[in-house]
Image (cartoon, rainbow, N blue to C red):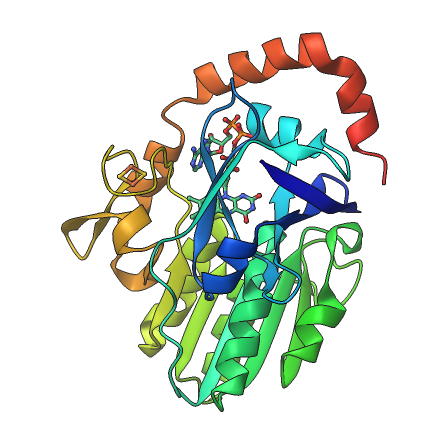
Length: 285
Ligand SMILES: Cc1cc2nc3c(=O)[nH]c(=O)nc-3n(C[C@H](O)[C@H](O)[C@H](O)COP(=O)(O)OP(=O)(O)OC[C@H]3O[C@@H](n4cnc5c(N)ncnc54)[C@H](O)[C@@H]3O)c2cc1C
Ligand code: FES
């Protein structure tokens, strides 16, 4: 059992939990993920790590409340326990000296970008970070990202703050302006990562994306997380989750992510009927 030692609502629908998991905190590196199971009837679902503290023995997760499992997780409080947390899983990011590195993030992807940018900067890279949000009300942890970046740019879809654009617009303009970028990392929803990859492709700047394909075991056994990269079948959980965004078959990925929509909606609705009181409470700080 894994204790939640801190829990906060970051912005509407995005929650941060700090979990006691000393074994994982000792081994984790940027790029890794964990698989959680909230309780004994729960399903397995993956989450990236937004940070960790080896000395305290804790890991941090920032998650978007979408369906049944994330609603269940959001309904837990400080002092509650998560039944299983397995990890670290996946391949760690290759932290090399690239030069100028652009880190683009949006939504829950802003979490894992922070330890990634920190590690890349410690390696000697110059970090240009771009954070996107639909509107100002959905921006979180910009100070944390600023602390580990040489430049931070904020792009806001509705123009309520920063630049009225998305991360992919920024990448296109930045590269068109002749700025030298040696590597791009993008974390967020598949659509955002696809758009960032398309923006950088004409300039030939390698763009690594962290895929969120559906996972069950997370160890290469079930085949659920199958993706096509450069025309070859790869398993996100063991060969990734990071891949070259210019080589992903995005249509296949996005279609596969929608495979179980009907079942997911039904399951979420049934849970909501019995747990409406938890839903009222989980949006409170
Ligand atoms: C490596 C990896 C890291 C991730 N990191 C984060 C993170 O840091 N924060 C965050 O908010 N989300 C993250 N996700 C996505 C997260 O796993 C899904 O949002 C979550 O499983 C949804 O479950 P649900 O029951 O709440 O929603 P559901 O209603 O069951 O599903 C909603 C949608 O989420 C996706 N999904 C459902 N089950 C899974 C699954 N087992 N594996 C992957 N995707 C699924 C599907 O596209 C589905 O349509 C990550 C996914 C992967 C693969
Ligand atoms: S999650 Fe089962 S093979 Fe990747």
